[in-house]
Amino acid sequence: MTKNASAAKIEQRWLQFINQDSLSNEELARFKTYAKLLYEWNQKFNITAVEDIPAIISHHFQDSLRLSTAINMQDIKTLVDVGSGGGFPGIPLAIKWPHLQVILIEVSHKKIQFLEEVIGQLGLEDQVSIYDKDWRTFLRTSDFDIDVICARASLQPEELLRMFKPGSPYKDALLVYYASKQWEPSEKVRPFIQEYVTYKVGHKSRRLALLKR
Image 1 (cartoon, rainbow, N blue to C red):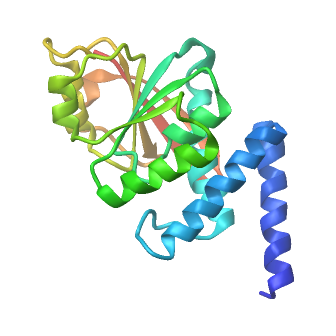
Image 2 (image 1 turned 45 degrees about the vertical axis):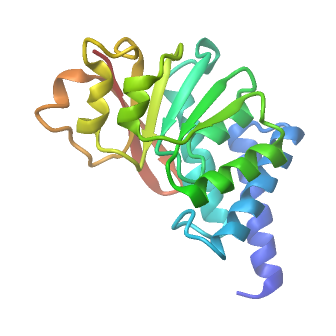
């Protein structure tokens, strides 16, 4: 593919994103800055396996935003992103819904540096914070007022179920697990499943599993 053809493909993908997710000019500008940072950092560090811009848009940005197909985002005040990595789904959700307070749980030093850079460049300091300890420490030592906890390509549901233990401050929160359409819960996880919401990103069929105590 020539350089001009590649640029045209990228621009077409941005236009699809604008139309499919009703992006404002400000949201688009933030997503473009985010994609640029992710592309640049991926040249030096392994932030995410998805590296080209069209794939970043669909597999990371749009996939993250599909949480809105399962819940009314206007009803959510605070959301936790477990094992955030490159900031997914937390940062795209914060861009799209500016009322949302987002906590990113991430322990990798390089990924924390990247997340700090993104938060600073996108002006999300008052909306997005980073928790730099592991999931179990988060459950044991924190006590935030949280509505939804999300996990996308991070911990397994069996580990996430710790949030529903009787002594957990988050036992009444909603857990949303991003999964492939083929994913099936284990016997341990199945009793907590409230609902599945299926959606498409590009040509991929995926689904959100909603879990409650």
